[in-house]
Amino acid sequence: MRIYREVKLVIYDCDGVMFESRMANLSYYNFILDKFGESPIDEKDPLLTHIAHTHTSKQVIDILFKEDTILDEVHKFTSRLDYTPYLQYMELEPGLIEMLELLKDNYYVAIATNRGITLQTILHRFGLEKYFHYSVTSLDVKMPKPYPECLLKILDHFQLPKEAALYIGDSEIDLETAKNGGVGFIAYKNSLGTPLKIMTHLELKGILGL
Image 1 (spheres, rainbow, N blue to C red):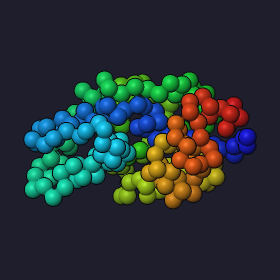
Image 2: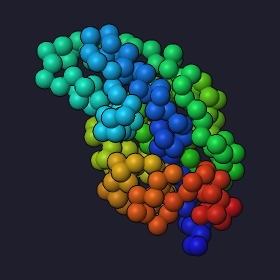
Image 3: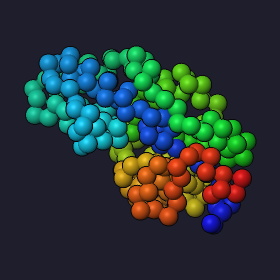
């Protein structure tokens, strides 16, 4: 297997990579749906559960309340909604902290996510701020994933070429983002037809030659 010694920057997606967060996201959006008298998302609905897991909060709300006259009211409500009660449903992916410990002194480490304001709450709750040098959320860009603006913003921050970065994601949106940005991609727990894939975070050691 090729060792990517030219890599100086490792970029993580949040949901599905750093955390198992499907239950948290579904609970969050189902609370909003219930608040406005709508039926909850069925956990067996693969499309809506995927959307709730990968899209920005605004995009999810737009889809759930499409053509609804109360859409603006829903957005105002969610802008004030505290995500903290849903953190109890989030679980750190095994091996993440151990891998971050190995990376922190020799690599730049960043996050590119479609989450918004909730990212900092999550990082603080799980004590992860110290491991990341920079993060870009959907609120920091004009065009969220799959547009590559988040990755390009990170590269610009560190003044690094595309070849010096790898992006770890778990969804088609993440893969498309990496392709659009010309950044190498590692699929996490999902092959996505890509040459680089890992099932555990510590497998990244082999790719980087650690």
